[in-house]
Image (cartoon, rainbow, N blue to C red):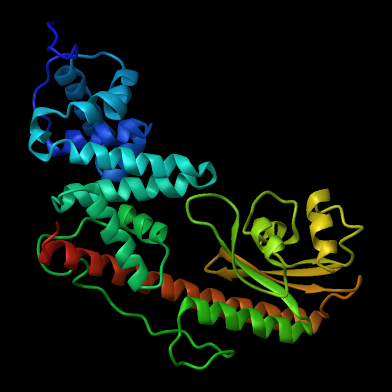
Length: 351
């Protein structure tokens, strides 16, 4: 097969779906992962990949990855000449975001996949526009962009025209004994749950973590009484070397009577806790519908100071109410965000 003047094999125009599949291949997704993301069969993806091999005149997947990362950006396929390679520059930008923080690779992969789906579904001018729509919908509904990306990738495809979920039923907001019903949002509810737990346990220090989206472990979302250095160090935890991580994995309360003597903690974690004058810890899992959504922990300055059995029951009740509310809020807010995104993508001009 003869080469073009720039040394690349000749190619035919790619379809929108082939462009999306090539983007996904450039992000090192497998055929199965691409099929799951695009909600098509693995066989359909394999057909698109075979077509890419034929159109680019290559035989190996590594060649397609190289094309997506370098050659395609420099010389876009004929179907993209009119955009002056804009989409491929956006691919590179999003891929750079994906690679900047390896610990968030799963989250960035979901965001990149969701942006690709939105870009193709609504025929937007660029991936940056798709990314902006996702982040905007998340911000307006009090969600993380990764939450909206995950919801978008797992929700059924919207019907043409109208609302995304036309037959949706709205569930009544759960009651919270520790917070009145005015102006509730995740930050206010989680802060109140933590403060009520601290008051119940009679402690000034405490934190509340939620399960991370797109990676294992817990993300710190509310805290009281800790230094900035401690908060930065424990912004995310995984494994089993902390009381909260153990409560997450076992879905059971964990009491540590003496941090300095406990085998639960890794040495660096033990040193960090004692530096904060923490000598005892009680971690309560936030459970709902058989899942652990997070952990709320209270910290005591003296060894042996753990909540009584009655107090632990009250802490579990606060955590359960919080879990029920989080399930309601996430379901409601995520669907609201998807409908918001769908409305804006279909009714407003994008430049």
